[in-house]
Length: 370
Ligand code: MRU
Image (tube, rainbow, N blue to C red):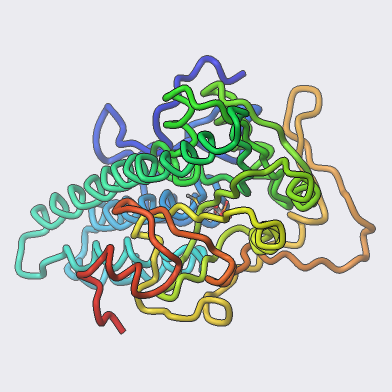
């Protein structure tokens, strides 16, 4: 099914011409591999909103290309207004991952009303391409900074494989290449450090079961998919050495928003004395927000994602009803793990404690952002 494709990246500029951006359509993985075309800002909005693409860094990069497509296709006399409207439109696609807002703001700042349209289109295109490359570089650096944590656990655990639990998909599908939580795992695996990953299925959309398991399988990383509620039991029985997740928005004081269910894993990790790290590029840090628990907007998605479950049946993806037709459903997309439960943050500049001074020590240019 998937071996016809050699995956390198989740989003790229078409080899034919740069008016077309291509993404992997993640709604079909791991069962079918389809490419989705982005030709307009509406395509980019749809891709983010409907989770053709997902994961905080990839949402940001897709929005950046969406801004480029908006300007490129514009034929009127008010390109600045066109770009502001595109930013507002894209920003309304999903509320939690801060990368989206970071991307649209950055491209708005790239626009120069004093320059000819063609020059602005060119500059904005290059800025989007630069952002894509920066996410790749950041993930690679996160990997390099995270590997020593895994190495140290391996040195201290008598030679048995390092057991890592992860939630959702924070791999290259969620980013562009490498991934955040998966980058240290891939690099450690490449270095020959024995490890095994417990993959939370991540209801309701099953990003762990469908995407993380798929990614780890492609790279030959030993892993086991578990129901979301198994992590606490495994931790109690000494089967988890490290919890490693991504983040959709981390605030200045170190609170970490990530896929719903992450908080429960952090609680269980704390109760069992297991380190809990979040891996994230600086594009996922909200420098304007201190407290995350009550202030990060948490997306609520369609009840159908909970009421139905999708799988491969016969020759197609099929959804079946899971709950009684009249039962109400709540579908919160994210939760926020308070900084006190976070052992550390792995960023492209290094590992730091989940608190303001440590973050600002790594990113001194962000002093006094409020
Ligand atoms: O709803 P999703 O699939 O976009 O949520 C993604 C996550 O929660 C990831 O863990 C997060 O974006 C970190 S990705 C590097």
